[in-house]
Length: 135
Image (cartoon, rainbow, N blue to C red):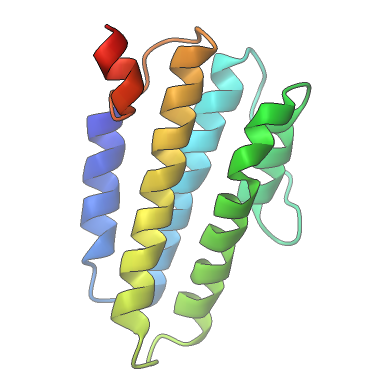
């Protein structure tokens, strides 16, 4: 599963159209959280919070699991970078912002993958070093 997300993040990180890259990265982040919600036996929401489905998915995923709030700021940073790339595609820092958004989405995917293994919800990714060393 992680290879799929890695490939999507890598592809979006180098798209020449910043708004398209931002949309692709946001979609990937939403899919990561939707996967988490599904693994917990719920149906991913189509609602939004503060204009972002990502934030609504995070809220849903953190329900009854306070430790999941650790990735709330990562989700908010993804939303922030989405806005930067969508609203200012011609900014001189666009390339750096696009790379940062890709790093944030990858961080979210790694966090969720680690949580899935710790919670016993199935294999999502193998990028969490302590989890790999135990097995």
